[in-house]
Image (cartoon, rainbow, N blue to C red; front, side):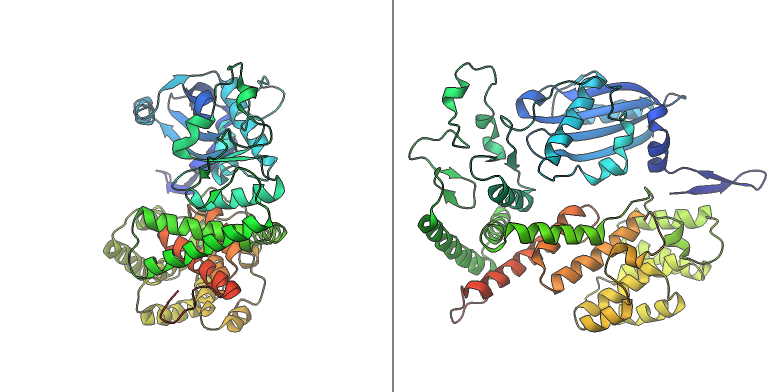
Length: 500
């Protein structure tokens, strides 16, 4: 965000935020060193650090978690302007769980961009923070960097690795690959079974061990268990599919009863969510429909992040002078960096008292009340604050969201425009993270209210880091939307005394 503070001459000096500095200047800094996990070729997962050194000796680095089997850049973050001791301390922490070694820049550059290129063949994008920030810690991907051949996928085919924290996403990928690539043209495997499928490339009898028509090397009577359902290694014909579907729906009914009676907990709840997601995308969703919905949703939510957590527009709206006071910035920063609700309310009430014409403190006050079980105070203040700042979009989004459950027509009349993020933030080219968060809460609740399950899931995956409500709450919301849809579609579980 823009930081301005007074100097001894009373002038205002503006500094770039870390994100903006990295985008504009990081490539001008000398590459200090690169680190790469030793086992990257065996595990096909690369943890990469690229560090650049500032003139005064401090370090800015990017970390990239790269999935060479399917997803490309799965996660990434940066640390800005660290002292060398702080940098070395972070390196020590990162290397505690894996052995890291220094690597030349050309190698890590090719690992990252080869994985991105492979993932793009299947319409899979790198983590949002890559294009937003950490891409600019790397050199441009052009002919100036030596090209090194990096193998991606498993024998040229994508492999979905199912981790405990990515099951819903993995289910959708598996469903998509099944419909677009077909059985045998992709792989999927549980995390704890990954090693046995990643065979040594140097084994001379590799081709004899793998059958070209089968995704895994299984015995004739052996079945592969994903933890959702069991499938024969041969393609399921129509009869087999019907039998499997009946088995899956029977399991769904039993799991749902157990969940509603409080008999599932911990990992069993995750398996329940996983099973429902698998069934929905396997049996209920047409691939063409899924792609169309995702494309339409992309059209609504695509935006450019400014790199600021909050910015001048969030603090001032469209009112008057936008000279950012250090005191205001510190208060807003303090609000977002404390988990103490009492302190949050103290900050906003003091801010409202001291800065009566700044909309940000009124918005922050509402954000402390929006989750209260008793919504009466929130709704009362929402109308008062909206009257004071009728064109301040974060508060308008709160008001629009308040209509969703009870009066969708009134919600549409209130906003008076489309539902896209730039329909709300008109005339803006870049948005702060808080502005995006506020929109994501609104649009995800909208899709939930109209039972657009595909769009709701897609939003949760795209903006998982921005949604501050506990992740399991959203997963359960999505799960019960799917159960309701499948129940109505197949009239399952509607026996007397059963509640789904």
